[in-house]
Length: 54
Length: 324
Image 1 (cartoon, rainbow over the protein chains, first blue to last red):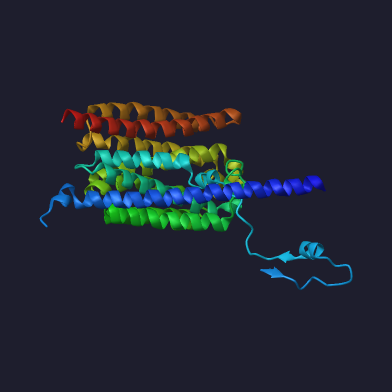
Image 2: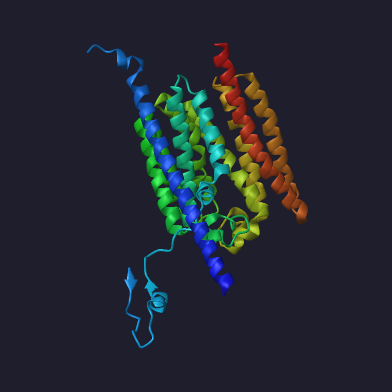
């Protein structure tokens, strides 16, 4: 009985840990994608984008 | 949402045992999938070959692409290939659990549900095509979308379980990556990229049939009509030889159309000889465990063949660019 409760607790801990890892992976993925879009936009604008006449 | 309908309040009922009797109905079970399970859904080994051939397509293409855009193109192609793998695992989950080769995949193991794989694959397919189209060009983005759709709808859903020539037509999906890489740089599809497509297209059937020969019982069990199951081993060995004979001259073509130099031509001839030697051994060794070993040996050699062929193509272009 006790070991069953402990097993359930272990399962729950594992699920929580995996959930946290998935959340971190999604967060990193989104951050990386945003960074890529920024970088690609700057590349498309060209090197002289900051030097244009005001 | 908690349902209290089954709880009867009687004398002696306490909050603690009511709580234990509550039926928690909160919808789906929490996912048991780890990040590694999701990564396995992407078929990383297949993905690495796809990325490599796409990279060769990019380097072989005339013109240049900004390194950031080149990285995005390769990433998009990798993600698109991975998405195809996830969608393939979603659709084939029923047969994957019956086959020794695929039983350890995340869905048969119960770590990822079919719905999770479907959602993951669909999301990645969409994001990879849009990213490649928006940030690089829409010819490459469109080709990637077509490749994913071809692999899922034409190969996986339509042909795989219906015809022994599933891999001949469906294998085209695996041949597109160098063409996508080329299109990422040039924005076009040209003869050179079609030749690279043809090499992988002709390579796929003997490569896959060699595997199917020594995994025949797996395919029989799940009633997938791979050529050894549908037409017998003798016919498969004959077809492997025929496709190998067709592959070798096509693989030499890049040297003849001025795409690469003599080095590639020599390497291609030597490798082609090796490929034909393996095909001949497969054709003549038909009995017992030795037949399986010979087929396995050809399968492994075929991977090496494609890798070395494209690596030589890559090397020649890199050297040509360095020299100027």
